[in-house]
Length: 290
Image: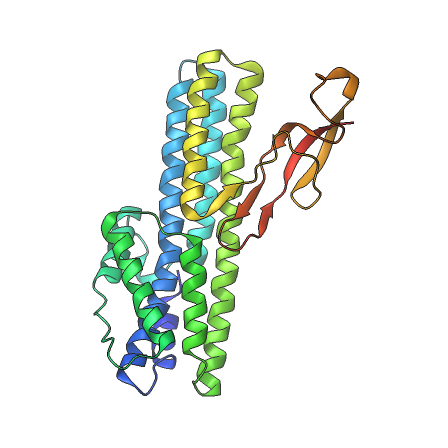
């Protein structure tokens, strides 16, 4: 999270001469930083839940349980490093659910924007604020699509500001983009830890474990989808260097006749795409027919 003193400075700098403009700028800025925070917190809590489920599944085997506990420790450490980089000083020592509740109350308590005499950009920004509040009210997850829309609106709203204010907003948007990229990498890295457990169990575990852990993996994939990160569909597709990375091959003579040359035979590591931007976040690693 953005340090408290810096947030206060930001609020002052992004204030404009008109009442509506002041409120919209401030609200969009707060929505941007707090939406990022909620994705961080929600993903952390979800990953803790998923690892707890895997620990429960494997608790009968001390050897497997040790490996699952290692994954849980890595997830806690990785998120701790991320939180420490962005946490506000006045929230040190607070429990994670306390921070989440506080952030949600900050968003819900934003005063309504007067829509009279707003230009098109201001009006669409006010509707975006309402969407954020509705998402909180319904208990739904925030998404990276909302992050991008908030960033775009803050950029557009600052176009008429004097140079010092405009430059400050540009700097804040760069920092938000960097934080978003770090968060996406964290989400995918933590997901891969879970999938590593799943792959290893498939190779060495029993059928019951495989099914139960696969259910956990599917829940993690659904969570990523809620945030706006989708698995790239590559199974049985012809090799495409834009979305795939070939790491292994199998001879066409060793597979069934319906496989074509250069077709994906199996997925070594899933690939992911940002749903709203189309950006390839991570290429799929595949084994292809040769």
